[in-house]
Length: 246
Image 1 (spheres, rainbow, N blue to C red):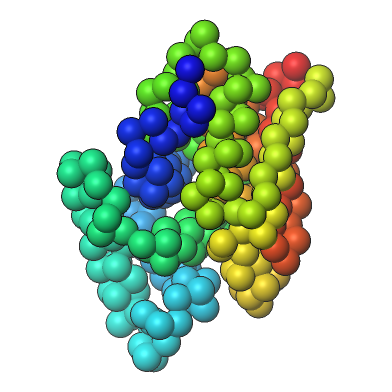
Image 2: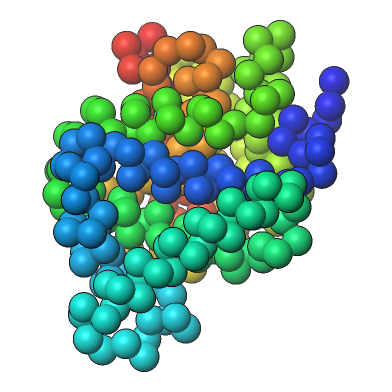
């Protein structure tokens, strides 16, 4: 059995970007389903300006006009999607950097912030993240769909993946009767946690926890719920439970 189910092909960085892009695609799909086909242009992009501009000042700080910022953000997202698609087609992450992954993380947080404002906490916790986990399951490496590999092994491989590629310094996953806990510390992207935009929110979910939730959903063949993510200045602890509470 491979030591690391995520990187048997040696494309670890690409795996990370692909999974993050899966989260972004899932947000888009659920937003269209719940809000409408105009969700990106009329709702997400205008509200993302504040959050993403703070996280990506090197891209957006020189733009002062709100409409211009929306157009710039739209181009940024579309260009980035194409860049990731090209990398995946070539099975090479050489053109993608850690900073690229960080920028995608900032865009994901912008989506999350928008949906919290539009849909509210109940819809986020009880429906949206269940759907995101279901959609994201399709983006997981094929080895993680192998039913002969235990959930514990899959999650341990995931934690190892995060550590070995420098995304976090420390990662631990525990499986218990009351749910699954994913702890990530000294995350490469944790400087987002110290921003004013981030601190002002009441509900926040860690992408590493979201990906773990998708792993659990794919393994168990039933819906899971990312119940909570507790953040520190350098990491997070996420709690995952089956939606039926078992």
